[in-house]
Amino acid sequence: MLIRVNVVQVCDARDDDSSNAAGQKTVLFIIKFYNDHSRQKPFIQSSACAYSFLYISLPKIYHMHKTLTACLVCIFSCCIVQAQTGYSNFSQQSSRINDLAKKYPQFAKVKSLTKTNGGKDIWQLTIGTGNADTKPAIVVVGGVEGNYLIGTELAIGFAENLLEGSGTDSIKTLLNKTTFYIFPNMSPDAMEQYFAKLQYERQGNATVTDDDRDGKTNEDPFDDLDGNGKITWMRVESPVGEYKVHPDDARVLIKADGSKGEKGKYILYTEGTDNDKDGVFNEDGEGGIAFNKNLTFKHPTFSAGAGDFPASEKETRALLDYLFDQFNVYAVISFGSNNNLSVPYIYNAATANQPLIGSWLAQDVKADSMVADLYSKSVNMKDAPKSSAAGGDFLSWAYYHYGRYSFGTPGWWVPKSKPDTAKGEKAFTVDDATANYLRWAAQNGGAYFSEWKTVQHPDFPNQKVEVGGVDPFALINPPYKLVPDLVKKHSAFLVKLAGYQPEVDIINVKTEKLGALTRITADVINKGALASHSKLGERSYWVKRINVKVNTSGNQSIISGKKIQTLPSLEGYSTQQLTWLIKGTGKISIEAGSPTTGTKTIDVTL
Ligand SMILES: [Ca+2]
Ligand SMILES: [Ca+2]
Ligand SMILES: [Ca+2]
Ligand SMILES: [Ca+2]
View 1 (tube, helix red, strand yellow):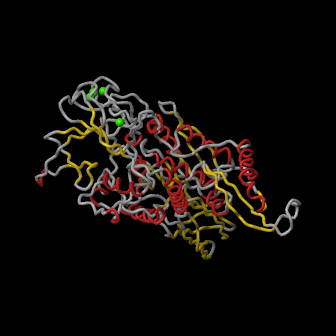
View 2 (cartoon, helix red, strand yellow):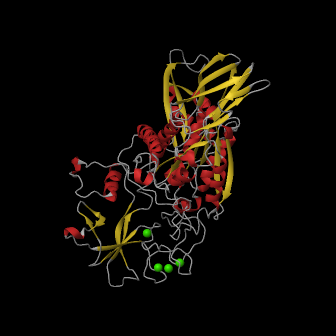
View 3 (cartoon, rainbow, N blue to C red):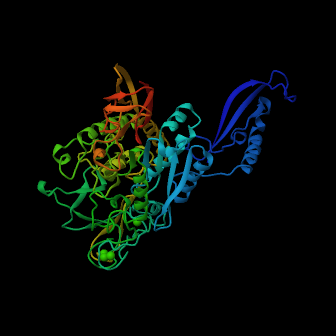
């Protein structure tokens, strides 16, 4: 807990303070209470409690300590303290999510989509106004992988930021136009391993699996050989080792390059023993099916963590069932290892034109680079690691099988460190992610690293075995103090992305009298930067096109032109001209719209 006391002003003695002699100076203090150093807003919600104004005359300032103490005791006794000093565990996440729905009932609704096999709720937050399901929508998904805690923080933090701003006109206008469906954590079973007694990076849920198909389940988990509560690495000295020490940092191992005549010294394993003596280490521990391997596009069937068939898991199934019913979704943002925001896709004609489309279509690649540009400007982070979707992943599903614009980012990565010349550091001779992390972390508050320590290992009785290395989670999750700023930047990005929303309008309406007939010409326009739907979506039943309808009545009839027609994907800021010949008199109406663009209706007098 941080208590901040601000001296606001030094002023003349208060008129009503009879104890102050005229001409004495008085100091006005404001006391604010913060959950921790990284939170930007005081946690005390009630304005009566949030600020305590103390007028203390200068001669009495020696009493200040006593007065402040009395005031603090008074405030503590009437407030509930919620400590938030690091990443939220599942129960804290659940409270944060449900609190939003309680605090902002006019904007936010929460429901549990399903429960995982581990008994944890998959929360859904819907943020919007009125009939939210009828407005164009953005989906935000966190916890795509259980070890990316930052993604869940970004998703919940976005909801919090958005709702905290819901009193402002700009956010009110946004929520009148756009709905956000937020699924903060798709991997709660796996994520809890961060908070468990034994900490290791886990992606699989609580479903029990036989990962190596030897007929036994969970028979060879990790083992904490050095007893530090974390699973790190284990290096075994061996003449046939593949790894050697990094030339610039002895704590780091890199692969020896045999083609350059380099010799390795170590075999590298994850920390543990071969419990079932099958020659493989830690091949089947707790942690079943990973959400990000359990989806339908290029499902990696038969690989560990993928599930026996796509969408085999309750959480996967529930999310897909829900989203397929939401025709109003035009973009899906996911926070996980797969990245097309800081490293946009490049068009590949050969794979894009295969019968089974294997890469983004040309028009959609353009949209990706436009949104990636917006992302880079919003978050201002460089040197993103390259990542490729491995199949069964959510980023691919949302584009190839759901037909929507799908954008993903890890949300954070270790920045490229610079050598500290004052300490005599030089640029690395070999680029390596771990060496870069250790240098960056040393300059930014300290590294999460366990020094290499020799252990007696039952599987290597006559060899030197050491346990150590970078701690789990450190390379992909920032120190928590950086989270609030990342949340702010990602929230700004999401709000700006909503500004790219496709929006249909009907303009340039002209009527010409041709005897008993009237020729009507009108432009259907997309006023948004994104197309009315993705180009790929044109092929999907689950994506609805812009529908243009002419409503006639009485003696009116349509002589030429279509009463109802659907338009192909209407590019951002583009128009399509339509024309009709109508017989009769009076008024007709023309309606154009789709779930992702909203609907516009105009009346035309014949
Ligand atoms: Ca097994
Ligand atoms: Ca085994
Ligand atoms: Ca350990
Ligand atoms: Ca084994």
